[in-house]
Amino acid sequence: MLDNIERGAQIVIKNWMRIRFWDKLLIVTNEKYLLEASLLKKYALKRNASVDLMIMEKAGRNVGVVFDENETLFDGYTAIIGATDYSIVTTKATKRAIKRRSRFLSLPLSVNNNKSMLSYDFITMDTKKSKLMAEVIMKYICNSSMIHITSNNGTNLKVYKRGRMPGFFNGVAKDGNGFSSASFEIYVPIEETETVGEMVVDGSLGYIGRPEEPVKITFTNGKIVKIEENSTGYKLKNYIDGYNDTNMYVASEFGIGLNSYSKCEGNCYIEDESAYGTFHIGFGRNVALGGTHEANGHFDLVGLKPDIYVDNRKIMHQGRIIIPEPQVY
Image 1: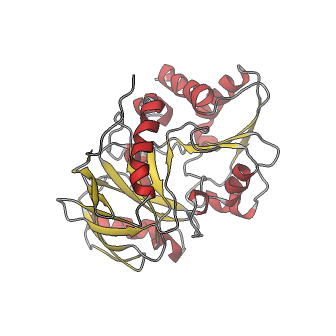
Image 2: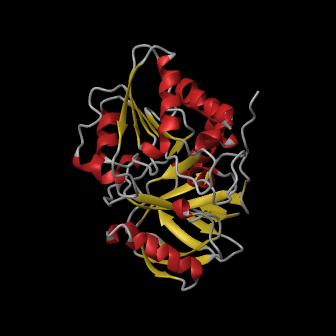
């Protein structure tokens, strides 16, 4: 297990962040992930970089609030890794750091088993292949104004992106114009007041894990207005209400998983939303993704085997991309 964690730490430092001797790296973490943080530091030091650890005393779903209230926390660093339970990629401090041309990697380490996220095989996915896949799909999304998602399980959802541009994550900060996430995905910061229809969540409840049974969510004017009353629905509603912020009910992101090594089993939030053949809707804050919505946090819900249309063109059929896929030589 330790060997696989070290493998993951090396990939993050060498391939994703591309740390060099002139870098001043900040690793944001908490006590739960000191092993992962120490290994990241170890391999950064081997590349002769300067490394600081920021250990958060109050980790949890509202950790992003700290980085909204203290926008200058990352000033002075050329590279930042957010290695806490929850993502801080959508915070004001991150947005400021990226604008100041620092590199940022969102590396949320939350899992629902005892396996370190850095030891998961999906981290070894070929980043060049994922980049090529993303670029092909994004060409179609860029020229569209509406994305329609359906599934045999009952999803029938429309999201809108007028004036919004897609991006992609594959771990590599350079590919993301300075920032990235450990998730392998195309993301779109959708219009926050336009999402309409129904999504059946049958893949993952994000940080909560795998749904006990599929749950139907109904949207009007961009916001969840109804959650099906079953065991999964009660759990989801309690989770969202735990943020103490009604803005967390707003759909603010659409995503497509790109990682063929990922499995959507509810064990690892980042792996779930990365899985090829899935889509996800993100809720809450999206400012660092290119949106305008503020909230106390951000989380994603994952659906399986979608049909996806951009305007009237079908680009995915039951979870398989049907536009020409790129060949990697």
